[in-house]
Image 1: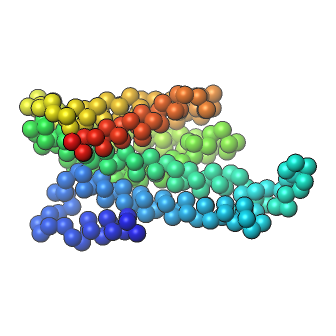
Image 2: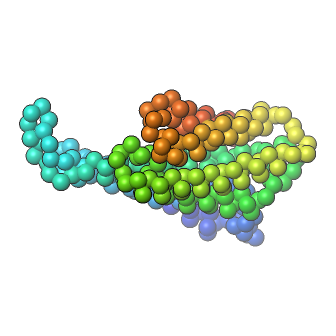
Length: 245
């Protein structure tokens, strides 16, 4: 309901003369985040309901036939992999739900305190739209260890590498915004620059994990923890601090 509210407000209640391509990037980031939330959380809710039924009502959506403590479970035909697919179909867009608002805030703050318009406004908008679209096509890279088909793994690997392109465009445009600007190192500006730094640090480890041959030995190591939390954890928090200041 919150996502529908954001989407409807953005599409129908803009100020007179405020075309979509004139909106601040902060508004664009919230608009795309709302679309992701609308499409992703519904899948998680469905998966949660099915899991609740498996646990309490004897259904077999995710639980295969087997034994627990030597006793037959009574379930039949369920697939644990189905749970992983449904969860991660939500789980990867959720990463961008957390980081896209920070990207919008960082764009606005860097522009303001560099005393320059944002570099490559249209490219920034299209990059965010691309991230939103591709974010729904890469969930399988969380599942390379699950025994999925190598062909599926290859497809998810290629899509994961592709999502690095719009992310790189955004990073270079942030640097272009600051280049030869009249930079004021205020607290929000320092946090926004820190956001870019952390986003790059976390993002550089992404292409490694996009390769199944490298991801499998790195699974369940702190390499994955570092990649995930540099971006979704610390960078997002720096975006929050920049916005609060």
